[in-house]
Figure 1 (cartoon, protein in one colour):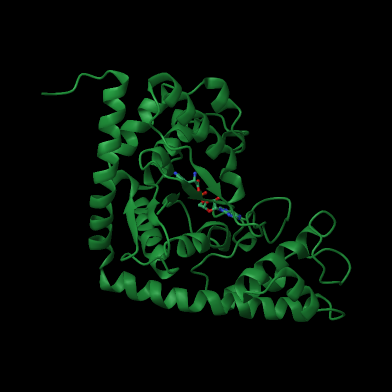
Figure 2 (spheres, rainbow, N blue to C red):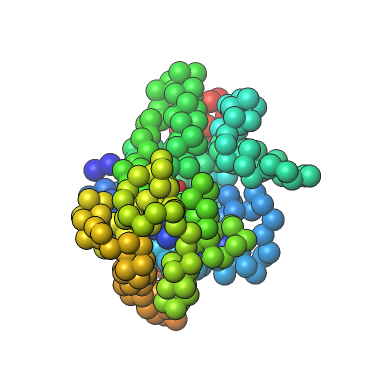
Length: 328
Ligand code: TYM
């Protein structure tokens, strides 16, 4: 059985991009592998968060994991800050990371662009992410395309540690969907769909009401022309919608194209909205019942207990290998 780890930030509302790029694979992998899925609150605070919102969003993301189909009987669901080893290994790995490596990270460049002051946490964010993964010696990391570069750094840090202190860390592999690794904004297909986009029309939130979903899809920008044809280079807008359709209706790209041959964008968009609603409506009902039941706290407690067992062991090994004095 392989070990699988991934995380989602509790900053803003989760989107269809998070669902297609990452969560659908979480649900798939839990059937065959040992999985750890966490709410990465320590990462969220690399940009300012309002305390009450952070608490609410953390609980909400954990409930969304379950609503999306992650079964706490099959996978460990927990909050990053509940497992202390993450922060501690994060610091240790920061000391093995070069400034130049962090400066090259595109997520840092994007998030810091044009800002007058940028927190140091945002800069060292990737070392903490490496710790998240390495602390479980994870084999596979299901993520969207935008996290690939962070995964590369994680692999470099694992190799660096292994060559300096002796073979220890597993070198993790990214697990990225072939189609849907980068769901784009509904208003601009040159940008990825993001929960932090101030234009709410640019993303579909997992908790958007059906009427809102229909409206957002009907207003989504489409390329000129009328052919429902998958061609990301020349028709990025419609290609993005076809990708979403394919995931929500469980059809291949070719099947979606065939279905709308000669029909134009209108009927396609109308059906697309219904497929998205069909996926999100049951998810929302489940979400509501999980929140009302209050069971999430016990699930998170058990998830963190199991995760801590493994993570504490790794941290102790790492400290021993690096020459920290072991308390006696
Ligand atoms: P975050 O919270 O930005 O996004 C969570 C996951 O959703 C994927 N994703 C997308 N996939 C396709 N299309 C999109 N438009 C889209 N938007 C987001 C992301 O690739 C990600 O897989 N650094 C991570 C969180 C993290 C993590 C980790 C992930 C912290 N520690 C350890 C894996 C392993 C992040 O900010 O994801």
